[in-house]
Length: 59
Image (cartoon, rainbow, N blue to C red; front, side):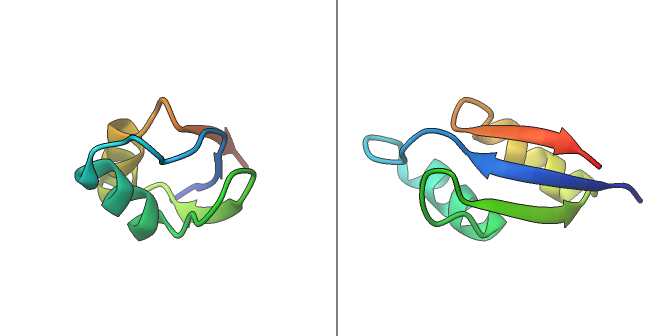
């Protein structure tokens, strides 16, 4: 599997609870926080749900 870097670029204030939980599950805590994950279908699904709040960079 390939690695991807996920960076939170927008605030979670005003988001629905499901989106907040997805950000938490991805390990993102604040704006400009970056985490690295394997590109599994589960992770990609979580990213798809919050695509407007994060940016993704493939390694």
